[in-house]
Amino acid sequence: PMATLLTMIRNKGNMKSCNRFAEDDLQQRIIPEEKSRIYDQEVGVLLNRAWQMRRMVITKDQACFAFPGDDVQLDYIPLAEIELIIEMKDNVNELMDDDGVHALQLHTDKDGHNSGRSYYIQADSKEGLELIRNTFKILVKAAKRSSEHRTAFRMLQYKVKKVYVSSWFQGLVAILIAANFACTLVESEMLSQESADQTNSSVATVIDELNLAFTILFTFDLLVNAFAHWFRAFVMDPWNMLDFVVVSFSLISLALSRSSSVVRILRALRVIRIFGRVKSLRKIITAITMALIPVANVWLILFLLISIGAVIATSLFGLKDPENFSRFDRAFISLFEVTAGDPWPEALRQANEDGSTDWSSTAFIIVFTVTLHLTLLEVTVAVLLDNFIGASTKMDEEERLAAAEEIRRQQQTSNPLEPLLLKLARDFTDSDDLTDRLRDLYQKLDADRSGGLDSLEFCAAVKKLDFTPRIHMSDSDFASITNDGALCDSRGQLGPAEFETVMRLQIRHLTQSMLQLGTGERSASDTHFMQFGSIKMMMMEQVRDPAIAVVVSCERAGNL
Image (cartoon, rainbow, N blue to C red; front, side, top):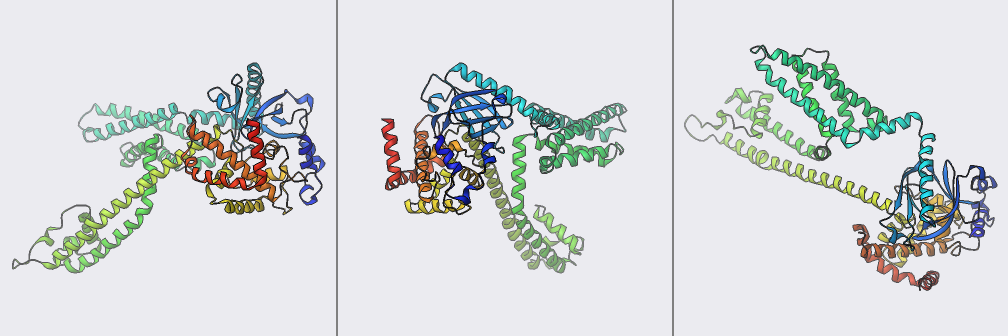
């Protein structure tokens, strides 16, 4: 395997694609020197749903992987980007052949070098795994502390954010907001009795002191929030901007008289902040806000029709009812009140002096009522409800997809090409269509049009594809999917034909694992099940490729 990898890296058959792999680049891929190594042992690494032996070298900054007995680095993990270290116990039987040995799972930062990929490491004994786990825990903590991206300010900000977003802290702030609103209600109740009851003056003093304390606490909460999320995350969150406006008004109110109505209004507005603290309330308000935008068009139509009705009413009933229809503004307000449910003005409902029906006012009332009150208002409610349900459903779907993606990332045991393979398996219609799609994909990956993809070029090109998180491939993964170079051409690269063979084979492996997920104890996502129709077609069509047929036959023989 090492000879194959060196061939892929150093191959001079195509100078256009290999010039960038100079000797200094190769030197950077060498395992760190011995004096900087803290751990250096052979371990099992889960690659393409199979345990493969790799040399793992851990330094104070990174964990490197190489072939056993070799110094060329295949992949590495910056220790500062390891988010979680888990000793696998529940799913051991699904991940490995030896039930007596546990595995270690490393979760990486989705925005880091490894693009959120999960790594699985297996030791030859439980004591060996414990040693690896403790080594990682100590070094990861130290690396996060000393990382360039984790300065003292960043570390403090991270700790403050962890406390601020905790459920107990947000619950405490919600309680303070509710208590402040209760004080506002008591203050409003006292207004009518303040001059009559002398005892209320002392109560008012207590309320003033409480409001001062609430203002200080809310200001502190805002400052902590700003520090924890500074800068873009804080400014781009509308709930944070709402907090900023409310707290700013509260500070302004301290300079005003307590009896000022403006002060009481500003204090009453503080309760709005509770919407951003309680998840269920925040969800409802966000859905309503999203639903109001489409409803604005219906409101515009409603405004125009009321305006037209006001102009007509001014001309028809200006003399008959000057109090309500002598001017446009009066007519508009009168019709708006009627639209809101108030009765029509008495003058429009009266008959003529001779006792006959005033058909002009009657016709106007009927047309206006049918058009606006019975039709357009109902349409407005229907549009609002439809968009509210749509927005709420969209938010639920986004939360579900985010949770499913997190679970998929944590449980990922297949190769990192899974997002790309899933897209191909979902989109293609037949074998010829899959060939066309793979040909187009190869053109995107082969940016220099050299007609060959070596390990480094393939890994770099795949990472540029539009997937979130990005696909992180290593030389070790490349060696795994190409059967240690057996599926490459004579240059150690993937030409168009070799690329199609490799990708079809990987899709086949993926579909087999999906079928196992569908029938095993673990549940597969709905997306997986929707692809099963394509799976059967694909597995039947793939036997047409002789190279795949040979590999499949070898795999079956190995299993037997």
